[in-house]
Image 1 (cartoon, rainbow, N blue to C red):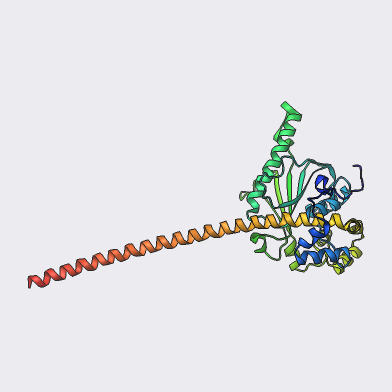
Image 2: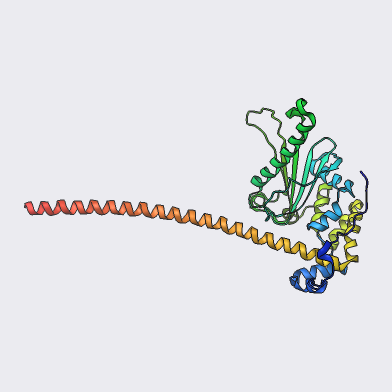
Length: 333
């Protein structure tokens, strides 16, 4: 695979100077104070830069320019040596909802034919299993249509290769937080009978927040990659680069962003705008879930109240009947 040096992505028409475009300083001062401080610290070399943002991750992990980096990461996650055969187009893979929390995805085919899709989520999905199933189903159908067209009458379902979804979450949803301190979650499909049935699906979730909270030592290549993906602390960066020198070229690529602070500000602002929009959507989904739970609780209370009212009405009827019987008994005397 031919390697080429990646360049910072220009923003096309939106990047051209015109009367309506905000200057870099205007964009910068519109950022939250905390984000301004992070950006200034990075530009001045005080701290590193987390690459869990779209443009930054793609710049460093570009499989066309640096396939060895993605191969190293995938080998660590999949626990076997892998080699990238080709980069796959993303058309038809990304789910069509405009409010997707997916910030970045890279799809590749490995030498053995397996297809791997790597996603980074700044905010974890509320329904990770359901969404991953839809995503993988689309991935499988892409492969099915392609292989069937290629092999025609010789096609067999045995020709289909596994599809693997690797989801890296910076802020994990509750199902993953509940199993702390586990930070990597590998799907295993088995049958209670012990039958060996091949499945094409596999999902692997990685919780960066749990990884850091658990305070893991960097003893393996996987732990090194997770540290690289999630830290901007200078001391952590120095320790990681010292133990694993192969990350030095990655950090050099990140430092390249300092050479063009104006472009960096625009890119950073756009990344935060996407994150803000996704946060709003996430909060809406959370509110919907809370409303559904509240309605369910109110409905249950209403049902319980009706049952109590019915029981009270039955008691009142019994009391009225007894009073009537007592009244008749007294009249008979």
